[in-house]
Length: 410
Image (tube, rainbow, N blue to C red; front, side, top):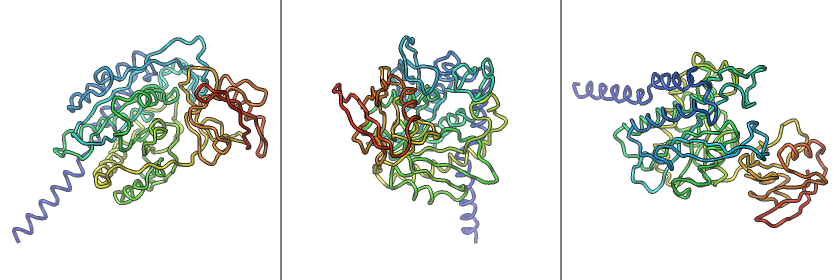
């Protein structure tokens, strides 16, 4: 009888410890700092964003992660970027400096998983990304977008570095600059990574994970089609959320940069809301306990997937994120928002869509469509707006410096 009572006590103790793997108060503390008025909305490449970067780096160091950037914990990069997300013309623009923050939990393993989130936001409303009718001069704190995701990265770093377990993979914790300007920071790292891309098993991204509705418990998970192992692991470890799946690897957040390098990805998201890209996205609307549950699910998945080895990667069919959904046609391409030359460089081409069917490939640079010169994405969109399903457009492009021509059928 005493042994039976002791067993129950041990089970109860273990369950309590398991429930406390993630501490909601830590999430609140980190969001409180990152989304405070003192940081003025963490605008990309501002001094306020650098303060946020220093805070994140200090958290990584306190959790005994190894610096994994190109400058200690920092990964600095240069870019030329217009302030408007869909403007690829960089003529005459100054070179700017972005800064990712990266820490490594080195378990001496063959493969590494990436857990990431972007930490920049809309700043004081001058970058033309705000949805407020009069945004200039207003602090866009971005508590959900994306202080919530960064707080998740920090808390997972704390857990995995202090749990007394040596996981079967290394874990690279990454926070990105420049996401609000077109996934700039994650793309720059994927172009010049600090570890070989071939050693990355998969990437988990968190963007806006702080507004879980306790009534519906709805959690959106994108990228489910990028590997055959994702869905089974989620469903095995989920007994709380009502999950809505999306198969696409391409989407409007940093997992896209990794997917385009043939790496399996997942993106966690608690849904759109009326405070998106507005000054009203504040701390008081954050559901920290709900976010803690998401982090618990990620932990369970990480351990479950340790038995699967290197995950297989699959390409997915995905929406054309480079054009407005109001257009009657789409080519099925992902523009390279960091391209500094003239033309529309293709960062991704969706299988089965018009561009792919015509033989266009990732890396091609479109410079003419019909009689229109294509210098920017606006030129490209103008041509699309003039067509309907069944039309054909003549496309001229450069592939590795060689000019080529194809007919694209919508």
